[in-house]
Image (tube, rainbow, N blue to C red):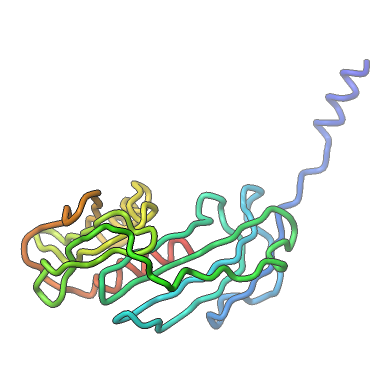
Length: 206
């Protein structure tokens, strides 16, 4: 009888509420209300900072608090020499718990990682790029038969999931390798993808 009662209690327990998180961003129009309810119980509350560098100088910083899947609470870096995107994230599990979290700050000391990769300057894609931070992979992006970009990336950017999403949304192929100058290829054909692919990667994980 006790077991039967216990089963009934479990069956008729009220469904758990989805997590609620603070929504805050310095990107205009991204938060219409201060508190949002996550679309699934699998989500976590997050606080993330994304910094973009152009020519070695910081030109934008995005601070964001919202809901995120745990597997997307990530730190990453993608670096094409002239253009670099770095993101740091912190996540927690509890209603509005991210209200108490300070925005994490990406490391701006740019400590060399020891990896050296080829990068593109104009149509010359044999320029040396010293990777920094957690950039331990060389990366290249191709559009058909033409190489469009080369540079350094953290392991996250080189995951199968990221490569698949980049291919799905841009129609280009992103590939990574480990080893100095392993991303060698023929001459480049610079396109708007120089900005599109890093921006897509940063959007996927923001």
